[in-house]
Image: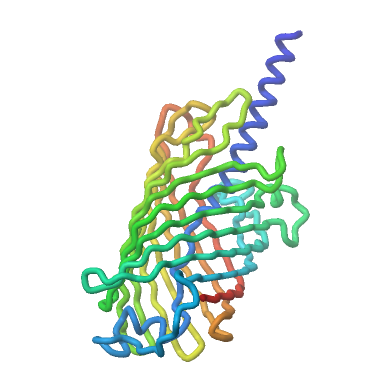
Length: 344
């Protein structure tokens, strides 16, 4: 009898741990969905990298004395969007039709030191702090949506190089953490990462109102995730991965309007992924993203937008264990957003 009770208790704890791991995986995947390329706010913003308003000197501005030894950038963004697959489940899963309305807020501050001339361009170091909060239970009574709510913190340290020919390169490292708002414990830290990366971007001015941007990024994520107890034990670095992505974006700038369409392909190789405890799985993901937006600059510091995007991910897993989860999914989003920005 005691042996049966022990086995039942062990199975119960193992199932609870597996459920917590599944929920945490959904949070981590959603928190790491790449953002679309940043849209220029006006023709002036695109003139410097593309040389539209003068190949030699670029855009001329009246010099103003600096109030601080560093330059500060403050940004706030709020978006509300509908998604048809909030759990990021495969199409053959009954939960794949789990639509939801998501409310997301982003606050960021970035400090730049004065730029220095380097190799016919400018090199600029910066450090930032980014905070995000995501709510997934808007207009829904399903408690499973609330279990996906999270806070995200990141500190990017970047060294950026840009020149008059439209080349923009950066190397940096980002430290981040994700906190689950609901679940077994309050404000649970489920994930941390330290991610060095290098990226290169080329801006091509097609005309005074049109711009094409091409970019690629290579990154390595060193991670630490919580390890739920029970029958299954997990490595805390099971999310370590290498990412290689490339994107192309088109912008049409007309007065206060910026219209954008973009495409991105990302290849992810998990270095030692695990499912159901110590069962190693060779996991490789390919993700294709397409999107479009229309942004209206209300003022020099405020803009509003409507946007839509779709993601397709094909995940291949091979290893010494059966596939307990299939990470292949399709997801579409449609929403509105408001951004505020200031610099000093």
